[in-house]
Image (cartoon, rainbow over all chains, first blue to last red; front, top):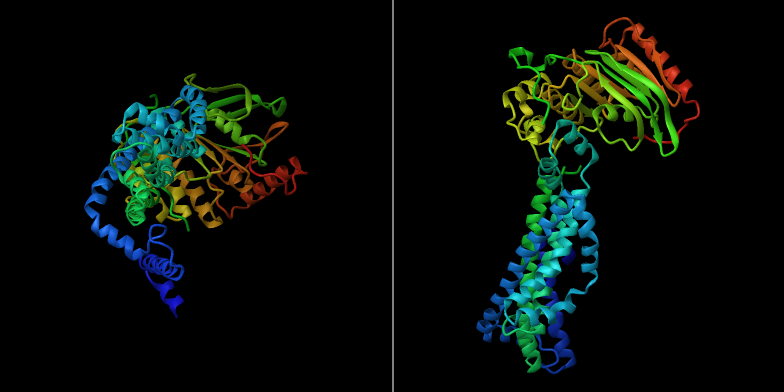
Length: 257
Length: 269
């Protein structure tokens, strides 16, 4: 019967039920093993840290959220512009492609210290981290979509006397929007990594910074509290982008069936 | 871009043929790498008439159509294409393929006016609506393509082709994805609406070539051979005995040309 209830409930409620179950299990493990709270605090302790330190957590959270969102917008824009440039010009493809592949081979996380050195401890170095991390998935997914325009449409456009740019913006780009949407989904998940890694390397504010600080002081409950705020934000960001992406895909493709 | 409308539309004449309709002559041979795909041949497409080009899949008939359309073929074509009036064909050709190629995010009216939008000119919506009426889809103008049946979608493609108002129409297996009843209907509609234009119909379907063409050719690796058709003007009645006899004869010639094809191979370029 319990299974039937879970199966029939809305996805949101189902998610909530699974979440509640995980919290319960976590509390149970803490009780059963008697592990010290500075190693693994129970959910109730983390909740108290969240409530008691909410002002400090929020203060740092806005910084991190800001970095993520600004980096996401800038990185996605750069990726989109790059993809269109590459699709428009064979010369750009010839010059840029090897550079892009090489750039992608560099582990971006390894750049965090140098970015901090160049751009300082402020938000700038973290925003650039986010941009670097999401740029390639966005650019390559959109570019792939642009290069997969059905042959027949291009023939039709040519016979109709369309200019290359009009065919690009009126046929190829709309057709590639679902591909861009999957790139943006990836970006939503990657972007928070970038911001947090940047903060770990050197920052004076932000959730990543707070987590590092709390960890150093054995305030594990505070660290978990900050982690959950970040995770909650990431999930909300993903859901928002996923909804937008699904709407985009639905608008620009043939519904199947 | 070239390709301004060759005539003004007048009342009922929304689908009437444009002023100067050229004949087309294609001469040449095709290579795929070093291998010869088809021997030197001459294809005459007389002005204002339907010319059927029948052949087995992969024999290169679509290549000839694409050469006339000025499209990339993936085949090295050595030869030339000439219009009877000596003017270039660019901007005077409209294309209709087996796939309707409707754009899913534009509504039906938006699909019919796609050409104008792609050229950056203002679409003539009244004319588009008149054309939608002529293919019986007035009520569907605001719907998205996925809401229409396969036959309706192909009628939208026909309206889009007519909207271009080009004197030369290239049809590449345009009705082969439809069921038999729908195909017969589309053949009649296209025959009526495209009358007076220079039409090249590429098909692997003997019945289609026999029903719609004033003259038809069989294409094979050896070149082109003329096919016998009834004296009656197309579109020929489905139950007409002369048409049925001609269809059978075409079928026999088609099979005789490619005896060894069997079940292998699909549709080529």
